[in-house]
Each structure stands twice: as C-alpha cells, then as structure tokens.
Length: 294
Ligand SMILES: Cc1ncc(C[n+]2csc(CCOP(=O)(O)OP(=O)(O)O)c2C)c(N)n1
Ligand SMILES: [Mg+2]
Image (cartoon, rainbow, N blue to C red):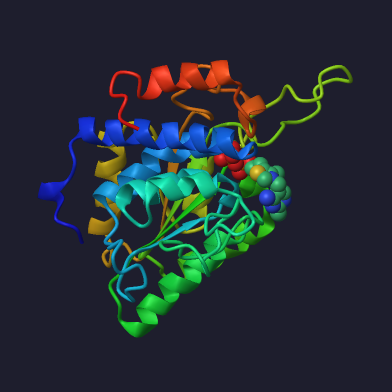
C-alpha cells in the first residue's frame, strides 16, 4: 500500500483534477470527436485512485504485484489517459494523438498498446467480470494486490455485470472494489414524448443500489464522488477491511455528468461533443485560467 503520509493534499488533488479536466476537453476538441461528460464525472475519482491510492509505478506498468484498475466504462478513455499522462505513464504531449489511427491512445482503452491499461474496454458490461477474474487470480496465487473497477450507471443495464455481482460474493472477493459513477445520465435518456426524444435521465433512479448490492452479499457505501476527503476515507476503509469482511465492496459515487465546466455540467448533450473555440476558451478560463500552466 502506498505511504499515505506522502499523499497530495486536497488542494493538490483538486488542482490535478482541473488539469485533467482541461486535458479532456482540449484533447477531444483537437481530435474533433470524443466523450466529455463521462470522463468529467469520473475525474476526481480517477485522480484520487492514481495519485493517492493505487499501488502502481508508471516506470514499471506490468509489475505483477501492482494494483489493478479497469475502466469498464471505456468510452471515458480520455479521462483515464489524461490522468495517466499526469501520473507519468506517457508524455502529456502524446494526448494530441488521441483517437488517431496509429496512436497508442485509442478512443477506447487497448491494454495491448497503452502503458497503464489493465484491460481493454468499450463494449459496456465486461469490466467487472475481468476484474473479478483478476481478484480471484490474486487469491489463488497468494498475491496482495487490490482490483478496482469503474462502471457507469447506465452500464448497470448490462446483464453480465449482475452475473459477476452474484459470483464475486460467492468467491469472497474482498480484494475487489466496484466504483459506480452514478451521474444520473447515460447517452441519451428515454423517450418522454413524441416531441421530446431525449429529455429523461436517471438510468437507475428507481433502484435502491445499496440494498440490491447488500442483498447480493456485498458491502455497499454511498459517497460524494467529487469530495476528495470522502473518496479517500472510503478507499482506505475498503482496503483496511480486507480479510476481515470477506466481501467485495461497491462504492456508489454520486457524481455530476460533465462536472467542472459550466456548460457541460448536468446535461446528456455533452455525453460526447466538440467544443467551439468560444466554449473552449470558457472551459480554459474555468479550469486553468488562473494557473495557465497547461
Ligand atoms: C455494449 C454497449 N452498448 C452500447 C454502447 C454505446 N454507449 C457508449 S456510452 C453509452 C452510455 C453509457 O452511460 P453510462 O454508463 O451512464 O456512462 P457515463 O454516464 O459515465 O458516460 C452507450 C450506450 C457501448 N459502448 N457498449
Ligand atoms: Mg451515467
């Protein structure tokens, strides 16, 4: 486990998140295509994992004892790439190649080409099963690493997730943690009326997720996915309880889709999209204007 006494402060984590958010919108704008809302809702969680929790070394990305992280909501790849670049897995300049045919940074994560990617993803629903396999493998091999998986709330509609929820508790995978990025929106929403095709949200708004996961034999905790203190306290609780609890944990992280940029927050319309020059300038002012050190 990393030495928590050398952790970045809350303010440092917040500054890193602003940098990552700027990279997300700047990169997608330059590439003329990509996702915005999901990467932005996940940013504070990803920064917390990579800068304050995961036992990983960017200089040794294949170390067999490293903690594993799977971004099952693979369409948010640019969010993960932005954080990995800040963490030193590859140069920040490489983000400019995002989604180009010959780039290591494809529109969805590819574990065969990108340093720091533990599982390819993009076809929603598959990451938790892969993570459960890694966690089970760790137990069988007597290894101490922890496996973290992030899914979207819309992604919870994929049945394969629930097959794994069932088996992970049966195997007692207390070395497996699922983070749900509960931003209340998926790609479009549902038809509300003939004239209003896309104005609905809440993919799992009718479900008591804590109760459901607890019923399946998991530990469940709900947090504010943008509050670094709450995020890190919860991450530490999860790993401290390993071994004694004998259960996998789900962290239900309440987030805002498009978080951090005024015109992208809370709207499905920025699930993906390309900013105009004026919008990019606004985002820059809101995210790094004062620091200006991109
Ligand atoms: C199996 C599969 N079906 C559909 C898609 C297309 N798709 C990409 S993102 C998305 C919506 C995901 O919503 P959510 O899980 O809530 O993600 P977030 O809000 O974090 O972007 C969909 C349907 C896909 N990538 N994979
Ligand atoms: Mg969502």
